[in-house]
Image (cartoon, rainbow, N blue to C red; front, side, top):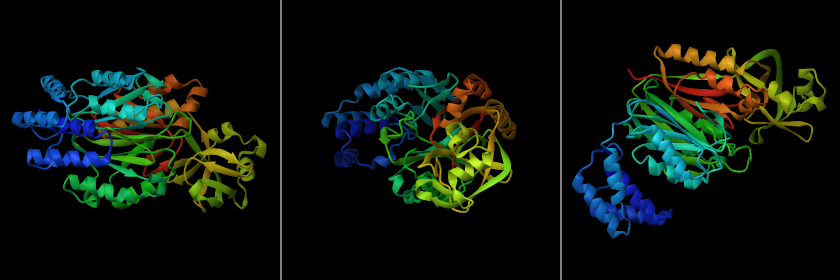
Length: 458
């Protein structure tokens, strides 16, 4: 069975170092010297030599770490029938360890491929990332915290959901983390070039039909726009995803990559596909002809102070035909603004009014942007239509979906009592997702669901 050696080595390093970077480095060097080869030669896809497995167990014992039970467990799992179909998983267990085990039980024999999970901040982030990776030792693992979890069980809270993409969907998955996102996205260019290099490719030469990316970003970093610009500059591969949430506390969000949890960061997954994919971008708004031009802005703070040379609140309210004092959260949620790209709006959602004059948005608005006034429509109906159109474009049934659904849509669904129709609109398909603090599709957008749809393997 491939991957056991790599899993044992990572467990030894993790247990020995206890998160201390200098001990991680020295432990890796000790193991490499004793094995007589670089640790990079052992991956979750590389075949396992029983003699080397025994050597690694012995090295662990010399370092005070017993991995014999883990080796026995992984060997036992190797006799199980591998999962060929995508699987979704759900748990609302209180303990991260129990929740992770329940996710693994729902997935079954997960060997290779990618496991993506979305967890409430009710779980301690470092404990959750460690627990999930411990259960999914032979998969690549990414995830983030949420403002609500989404699966065929519905829109839930205080839970964790996940989606497993087996090797029948992807011939390879590579991961990278971009840190200090709030200070800029310079690391994203280097990360994508690294990911492409792992496949022996140049980032600008990647085949956009064979590769797709997933991006999960800290939803409070304010760095998503720069991140998406950087990704678009270094590759034509689409990166789809969402901004992590923290259950509407707006204090701290977390990104997960393998067994680590990060803040002020983004995780990138580059997937080499065996199946076709498409993107369903669904937002339930119609565009009015009425536009507002942002004439005084603070882009870094995502705040507009003037539209059409007038105080932003006054101009926005006048466009809606209401008094400035009536421009409340409900009015702005029902009538956000949108940047027209062709016939489609890229939504810019207001977050709050500042000092009665400025309007702070959930994403960046640049000076000179002409934004259309939007009217909300039918979320369940639009979602069902857009997913059905995506399935038609694939030319085969959808086998799996990752759903990045804006928290503002989530709140509207709850306030209008239409959560169940929305979940039903996704159909009897395999999916998992979360309520985001923003969605990633070419740029950073709001009040949208971006849905990554994978065709079912033939």
